[in-house]
Image (cartoon, rainbow over all chains, first blue to last red; front, side):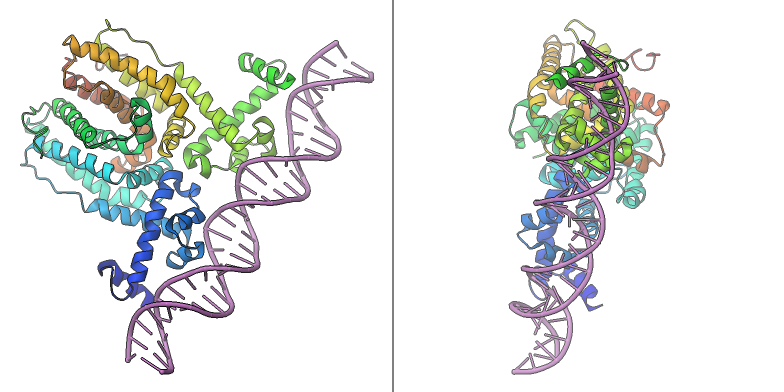
Length: 228
Length: 228
DNA sequence: GCATTTCCTGAACAGTTGGTCAGGAAATTG
DNA sequence: CAATTTCCTGACCAACTGTTCAGGAAATGC
């Protein structure tokens, strides 16, 4: 009992003071697990590898997380919580072009900043998203439906081209932006580069914004590059 | 020595006659391996599972393929060979709209017909594409560069909007089409469906064609739905 | 200071992993 | 037919898997 409440305290408390060790080691383990599970999937990632990556003995992982599965779901939860914080609200009366461009650029920056987290989800979904069903069928679905509803309203108002499928548009933005994190190895191999820099991100963002806005029948005057 | 030549004979020979057993069992094993590796990745997929799936004793897999890795690369090679057969050539003087729409619809049909193969590659690339580097940096890269060069010519001629990045456009088509195979679990969970039918494929194809053509500055008169 | 909780980990566990091998069945060949 | 190649597989192996646990170190509370 005492352990549980202590654990929750640490969720909110900082990195110093009582229980700081728990917080520090847990996140150190989660960081290592993120890389390993993202690279090899759930079954492919071993506790030994994660422990080695984290610089801790294997038995210590199982002190903080009662099982491999427990560690995995904790990792998924941490990642989902981080992503949730970045889901800004949008309004029906906002400017469609503005919303779409900022959405694209935000997603692009996000997956570039956290490519391992993106790959972690990708691997999970590839396997049929067994641990994410509740999350997907719940909050994420609501989030998507809310955006789709607003897109539908925009279409009814004539602000967005009627040939646009709201859900398909969201999937398009997701897939194209994530592509540069999840399939980075392919992109690099095909373009002959060895890394994607800020310039690439801006250039890709420009292109994606252009494609989406044109497809939505929106003019794209100053929305493309004046974000800085 | 005799085995090697026999093996190569079987590659070309049919499913009956001498060495038919080898051909039949090999492909049966590869079929099973495709599903297992696509679902769990290379490390996550076990020979026991594949053997069970193929209805053969585990030791038999290692009679035909000398190691797990050998089976895996054989599977990748078979899949790559199948895909290569579907890479049609295009010409600079072809109609851009026609080429793009047929490309999108072909890719969409392909990944829907072979979702496991698509996921297999996705899992490989997620892990950094260690076994695909040669393939990606060779033939695939040439293929992409050839298409990109034609797109560049079209842009120079003024047939395609100058804001289009050739490589990024190809990646966009790849990622959006593959999305419906690789992330099928997510798409289904978010849309509340339990399968994607022919109607969905056509609808998604319509949308993607519209987006791409609009982004390329191409009118899309009769290219969208009269494919039948 | 002492008592209690938290933290830590080497060692051992049963189960699974990829891989080997001997020995025999089945098929093909001449 | 007999000779030879191909096919097949149960049994075994060392290495690794996730997990348990006892017992002790370190930190915390009072």
